[in-house]
Image (cartoon, rainbow, N blue to C red; front, side, top):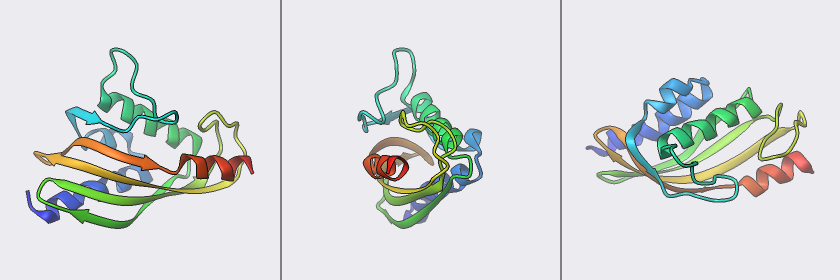
Length: 140
């Protein structure tokens, strides 16, 4: 895989989420995708749910809570089979998000994510998102 090919993955991820194309988003992930990021805001999937299904469901919920969600990229760094990106998410919280009721407030938060790319698909993920910052904005 070339660096150009691996940098396309985060750009496609941002584009599909901004377009609210959850099927296109899901197509970016390998069937055996592994998400190493687990937290209170992003718990591991339930029994019988794959990492891919859990990640798609997580972002489908974000699209419902922020129906005008826009995703931009600040920077992308790539090696032969890994790519890292800093994402910026913005929009108006119009439904429950991370347990917080709808506020109608604008929210802007970031995440830094590292992916292993195999055969043109996102195969593994490590990262962290500024969930505390997002909650401070909608609760503050």
